[in-house]
Image (tube, rainbow, N blue to C red):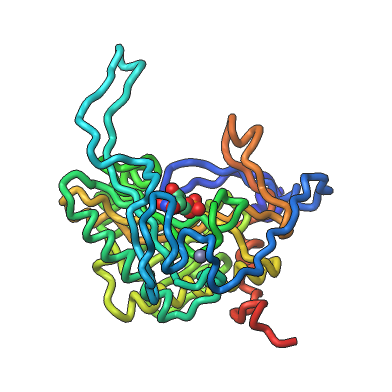
Length: 349
Ligand code: H2U
Ligand code: ZN
């Protein structure tokens, strides 16, 4: 009997991180008796006087937000990283190790409108978010004490997001954290061996197969990676192997905004809800090196599995062994591909 990855258990390598995911396609038909969570209510006013991100409102620290018209950035009033940490470390026989870590945390409001989310914004409005990401990457990354800039968004209460006002965060710090460090090592090894970026060659394979591609435009491709862990995980890959947002041309920035809008509309349409996720950019470290091995991309990690309320949990074997999935990345890509690019709230009956 020949091996069939659509039917039989197998493991897939994450080419970017070197980690494996166990895939169990034969289990996707098993009966579900999991927890049912209440759907998220998402009818909101355009302006909420009690929201600390709305224009003109004051934040917890007492600062007042300006009457901003498109995007707005401020330093997080409860930053996880402190800028003024003195150098220092602990090392007891290599077993108890700690290092002082400094950094800067920022919050970025995507829109003054409290009731919007990325998929409900226009492409030019999302483009302004892309521009702010690029300028923050440049400003923070230029600091000698910042060697990595992580831009991300937590969306929805299921992802622990504390406020529905459309916003994201930036954590910039002295060291390169675990995920980009793993990806950086693998990309460097690949680039040294082949002289091309890992994601250029991966994208070429995916564009030939097409079975995991969700959408594309002139400059970006969105696909469910071969090694996806989360049921509807996607990766947004720049066609040109650029290392960071500041290298994108104007049309490429517009294309990124277009890809983000179309992807998040499809996400919302899967279960006709505001689709929760954590997403973020992966770009080169800002350590002063060129890093030609780095290839700009974004990850989307949505927690939902088979309905608006049934989520995937990372438990049991996944905590102790490897991550595992039942529905295949190919199946999920098909579900995302068949969605309309008209948001369900805008769709006329
Ligand atoms: P979430 O994206 O996880 O909802 O976080 C929003 C951030 O906003 C959170 O990191 C910050 C919190 O520290 N915040 C402020 O900086 N000022 C405030 O007045 C409230 C929340
Ligand atoms: Zn608000």
